[in-house]
Length: 246
Ligand SMILES: NC(=O)c1ccc[n+]([C@@H]2O[C@H](COP(=O)([O-])OP(=O)(O)OC[C@H]3O[C@@H](n4cnc5c(N)ncnc54)[C@H](O)[C@@H]3O)[C@@H](O)[C@H]2O)c1
Image 1 (cartoon, rainbow, N blue to C red):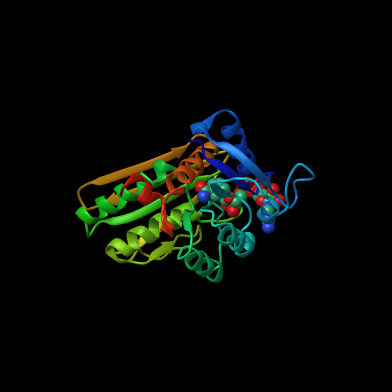
Image 2 (image 1 turned 30 degrees about the vertical axis):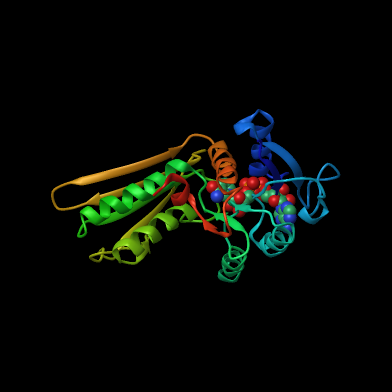
């Protein structure tokens, strides 16, 4: 049976990519409704306005929208895939609370490949507990934030697995690296969609893990896969590691 998806933030870059993939037949899903506060008359302005059938909400909107979105999802008893990033600690607490009542899939990076990179990085770091770990992320020259949410996500996974605080390296810093620290550097150039590299170096060898996104549609693809993954799950908080079985 096909999965009916309500796209929240449907007029934006990622929301319209989700719609385009579904309309092309991705995983046999259907667009149940398009919701966007700035979309014009072809869009609903809230999930609450939708009265038809649906299986999952996919959210690529803005972090401040999450409270109202989760209220609607709980009211309608619908699972939600939250692909939006930049949530405050208070908003993250709302996400955790909602996950006690409905299935919520939350990931700062919807790429299955990045989830695998993260898992391989943690595995590699556990085999080489004394290695120096450096994360280098590269993005297009228009990206506002640095380091990327994905680099932080990888650093947090490494840090909770082996300890050591993530340290963001600036271009003007000249201090020596401390033992056990997890370095993060950001590079901005050209039109690069996103490259994440993890270097694990001992005195005698380096292991390099690298993921390169070729197109933003991989995040839309991942969000649709996540929608299918959570549609019949019990309430709870799910992430990419659950989907890839890590
Ligand atoms: N998790 C991932 O893999 C991943 C990948 C790409 C982008 N993102 C994140 O997804 C979000 C959207 O990215 P984008 O590039 O599509 O941005 P965008 O600005 O192009 O689109 C966001 C859309 O959300 C709409 N919107 C804002 N507030 C809303 C609300 N309260 N209700 C309904 N609609 C609302 C806006 O009108 C806009 O059309 C960002 O947070 C971005 O960082 C996540």
